Image 1 (spheres, rainbow, N blue to C red):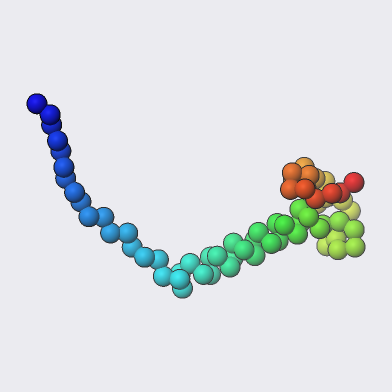
Image 2: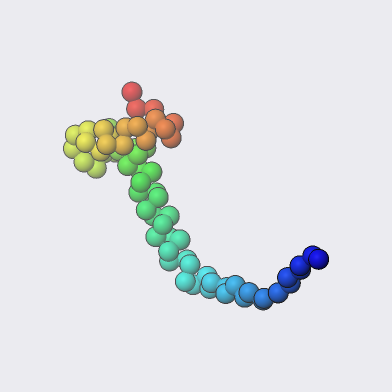
Length: 70
């Protein structure tokens, strides 16, 4: 004898208002742009810090993302 269990439950997924998501999306985007600056442009004329400390810290990430550095 085949056993068939059928129990249907309605699951309501709450909608997240745009006003709650937008500040976090902007904050995340700013953090990503800051990280992209440090990985991609932190050397030479646009350097914010003296020396090559940031460049050496993100050196492998630069090559992984395709930024030439030497």
